[in-house]
Amino acid sequence: MFSARPDGSARRSLDRRKLLSLAGMTAAAVPLAACGGSGGGANTTRSIRIGYVSPQTGSLAAFGAADKYVTEAMQAFFRRGLTVGSRTYPVDIIVRDSQSDQNRAAQAASDLIFIDRVDLVLVASTPDTINPVSDQCEANEVPCISTTAPWQSWFLGRGGDATRPFSWTYHFFWGIEDVIQVYKGMWGQLGTNKKVGVLWPDDSDGRAFANQTTGFPPAMASAGYTVVAPSSFPAGTTDFSAQVALFKNKGVDVLTGVLSPVDFAAFWREAGRQEFKPKIVTVAKALLFPQSVLDLGTSADNLSTEVWWSPYHRFRSSLTGATPEALANDFTAKTGKPWVQTLGFVHALYEVAAAALGQVDAVGDRKALAAAIGKLRINTIVGPLAFGGLSNIPKNVAKTPLVGGQWRRSDKGYDLKIVNTDVSNDNIAAQQDVLRPYV
Image (cartoon, rainbow, N blue to C red; front, side):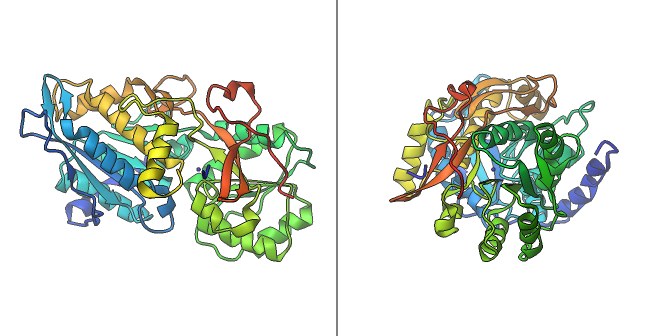
């Protein structure tokens, strides 16, 4: 089995987006958009309308690989309806594609708010999609739950201020501090010269990782690493010859970064041409998915990455009762494809949505629904979630656990092995291994 502004400027810019959406700028809905349930147990004609946005096409389409499966599973699950207050309502799920583009993501959210009149928006996968969608929801006072981007990329990338929490938008995922801890734990298993080359694109993720206060640089320095940092680069860069040459010249033993699969593939081709072979390669986002790794060919053996979720995790869905193993196996049986990490998180979005809706007295009370999300304490298929549960994390954020993994060649292609040795991770994942050198 295949086994990633306190000055308020961000918020002021929302008015322009709102005006554009009201002017009729629309985003195309994907074919599975009209997913509604007549509700076998429903006793009212009013439905609960849930919108969902993710990058199902474009350069980040790998993040949307589980969307159709989860949407159809939720459509079937909610066919019985969902009880809010004293009534049971049918549920409509309306799916829109961000096309891996920030402007299209904002338009998709506008369509859900102004055309589809949704009660709640769910959004997943990278700041390019979740940030503009969350901004639209915050500006137009619609509850929104997002996931699958480091919380700093979502909160700070939107101009978040911990002293003035967002009122309508909430996010669950791990943070930069977690991936730093995981990476240091993995790298510490092998002897290196502690020279780490970094690849930070000029986007929300890259800026969050590169932050000189809360990102990788101070953490790496405190751990004794020398950071070799070329200039940031725009997404879609195809020429990485200068970066590879710099890393070779400086004798880099460890390579890390946060890139899209397309950008890393371009870098890795250049690394091969220049015969740059670091001892450890641990890259966020680019190495999350089986297909992205397969596309690299045999040179992907022993590349490593963060692992948000896997069939080996020890959690259970509060909504369906499914375990990660059962969900992953069912996904593969129904789609013929290997499991992907986004599978658990998209599923968890609906768990959080259902739990929050169950806490309000009436459908349509958006203010009560947003407040209910902010108070949630729930066990999900990706782990326990508690919004506002940590004093050093924004109140709009719930953290999820994180471990590390390494891709190993097998007769089926590649297996993803969890390679943490920290005993505190024993309750997260059942299957554990140790990191092997890339070369």
